[in-house]
Length: 503
Image (cartoon, rainbow, N blue to C red; front, side, top):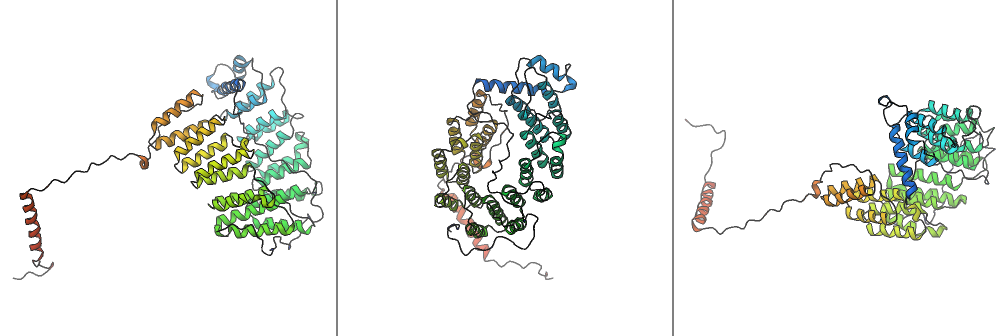
C-alpha cells in the first residue's frame, strides 16, 4: 500500500473553537528565539583517547575507589586519604564529572569530595562544576543536600545549575516542588527569575508529562510573563507527551481564538500524538489520521520541516512499514526538506530490524556521505549491534563491530559482553575468547562469565544409518508364517464383551 501524505483531500478542522482562554489577548511573539533543548549531563569520553585523557580516567577511577571505601573500616578520614594520594592533582571540571559518574554508590561521601575539591589551592568552583554535583545528588533524590549546596554556591551558580535542579525535581515526580522552587529561587539561591528560566521550568514539566501543572503555572504568571510562541508550543507538546490529544486541541483552539497561529513545532507534537494513539489502538488508521493533520498544516500555511518527516518515518517504522518509510525518505526533497542525522539513524535501525542488512549498510554509507558521520558514535553502533544480535545475525554484527573500530571508536564493556554472549549462544566459544582477550588488551574491564549455549544452535550428533541386511531363507519363512497367522486370526469371530455366559 502506498503511503499517504502526498495529495491532500478537503481540509478538516483541527481546532476546537468552543472554549475560552485567558491567553486570548496576549500570545505569540514570532521573533522570540527558540528555547534550547535540555542539556545532557552524562559524560561522553572522546573517541580518540590520547595519553592525557587516559591519565585523567585512571585518576578518576582511583579517586572513585577511595570514595566507595567503607569509612568505618579506614583509619584515616576521607580528606586525609585524598590529601595523601592526590595532593598533586589539579582538579578540572571533566575530572570532577568522571569521578561523580563512577561513584554512584558513594552517597553523601561525594559531598566530602566536593568539599575537598573546594579547599584545593588554585581551584575555584563555577556554574558547571556545581551543576555536576547537583545532578549527582538529584539522581539520588537527596534534595536536602542540594539545598545546602545551592546556599553555599550563591553568587557562583547560574543557568546550568538551575537547569540541573529543575530537571532532577521534575524527573523525581516533584512537579509542585519545582513550581515553588521557581517562585523562591531568586530570594533564596540568587538565580535570575526571568522569561528564559520560566521556559526552562515549563519545558521540563512538559517533557515529563506534567502539562496540567505547566499550563496552570503559565496562567498564574501571565500578568508577569506573557506567553509567547515558544511557551505555547511547549504546552501543546506537554499535552501530547501525556497522550491527551483532546486537551492539546482545546489549547490549540484557545490560541486560534486569540488571533494567533500554531507553529510547526506544535503541529509536529500533535502529529506525533496522533500517530502514537493510532499505533496503540488501530495501526491501520495511522496513515489516514496523520494525513488529516498534514492537511491542516497545509491549510494553515505552516511549512513542514525535517522534524515533521522524522515523526512520520519513525512511526511508520514502529508499525513495520519500513518500505513506506523509505519511500517517504526519498521524497523529502519535494517539500524542500533534507534528511538529518536522526532520519538516517531511524531508517538504519528499521532496515536492520527488517533483516534488510544490505540496505542498512548502504544507509550508513549515505549518512556518512551526507556529512552526518559524527552522529555515528559509539552509542549508535551499540544500538545497531543490539538489533543485529536480536535477530540472530551475529556474523553481520561482527562486521558492524569491525566497522565501528575502523571508524576510530573504542568499544565499551556493553558491546563486548553483548557479542561474547551471542557468540557463545551460537556455539562459537573460540571467537568469544578472542574478543575477551582483545578487550583485556585494550583495558576494557570485562569480567569472565558463564554463557549458555542456545539449544537452537547446538550441533546435533549425526545418526548413522544402518544398512538393512538381506534376509536369510529361514528368517523370511518365519516372517511369512507370522503374517499368515495374523491373517487367520483376523477371520475368527471374537466373543463380545460383557456377554452373559451360558450355563
